[in-house]
Length: 268
Image (cartoon, rainbow, N blue to C red; front, side, top):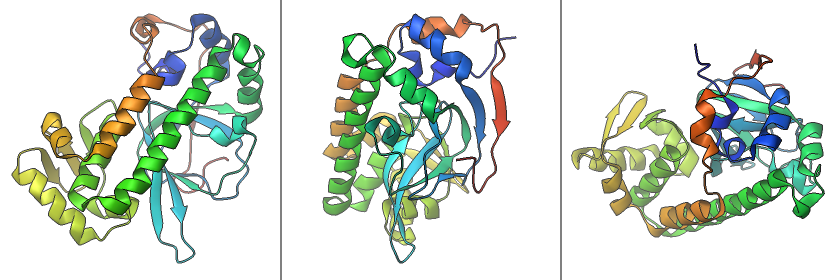
């Protein structure tokens, strides 16, 4: 039977040239990412890079009062651990799994080694790919700040749902309205009202702990400019390669290591 989990399900890994992908893949560990799992807290040393396949990880800034706000989301479009190759090693943010699933992780020293293995810009595909991804993430962070400051809750919710869909393999999100409110830094009542309007318009279907998107184009029409700015920049910087389709048949001779992580503090 074909393994339902493959590293190429992550768009960055799937976009690598075959030679570099095959050099990296033996070191990737498949890990379960349970809802609410904390990958690291602010100030922690980052010991792994994570490449999500079917989960979403939120980067949160937590105020002194304890109030969190999402500054970026990472799914199958990218990776968690940018500070490793940018030279920081730690981050001021908390990383939390907000949509359960799976990811592949790579030890920090191996990512750094692979990042510079070909001598940087001369011919290192991973080097260039990760730098482009960093630029796309910076766009997402900046646009999130603009959106949260200037746009209505309805528009923020549409943007957030669409960005989530872009990073998951399905049109169903398993989460609560309270969680969405925490991510956006708004009152739960505001999310309940906004979601109700979208459901009445036939764009989404809400049931306890689940949101199913029924009409994506309708959501896009209601979203503010911020979603389109982020999407356009990501598509420009990170075009998917043909390998994503062909690698469904790729079989590795060595089995991939698998480890389930705790729902509170994962091995950091």
